[in-house]
Length: 184
Image (cartoon, rainbow, N blue to C red; front, side):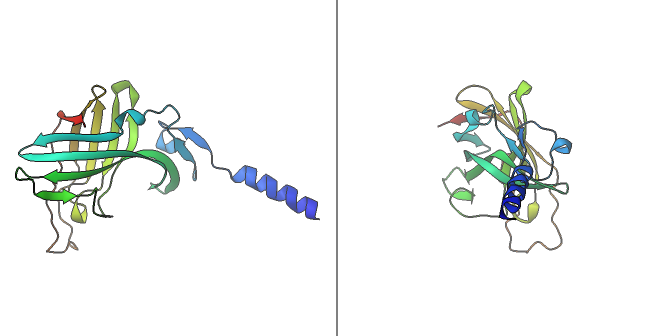
């Protein structure tokens, strides 16, 4: 009996092991509980600290790679390797306007959801600032070993009814395309 239980346990472990898929797997082809892995190290060249200036503000991006990031999307739960961006925006006097790098701001997320290797691009989901204002997509394009191009396309700038009146509703990320960031 113990031998049968051991064999059944082993079979169960083998069957329950998550399937590993390449980074560019189409969402509809990702089975529940799978792991979408950066097998070809496509994300690695983007890792680092980058700076740019836009309309008098200095933006510093801190790009790291997170492996096995839990993703819940369209009724599926799976894991993926993703680039995560934390950032600091300072005005021309050096005053910090928004800081997701040093403060724990759990409601603001900016992480990669897809790659376009043929265009040298990574696509990011931006949850928006407080109350989700400005949520949308950010596209980073690798120009050289030290430069990336930034494009931010907000999908919504409306304020929800349950947003506190005191919440900072300003989107500090630059809403533009072809903004060049330089690696530090």
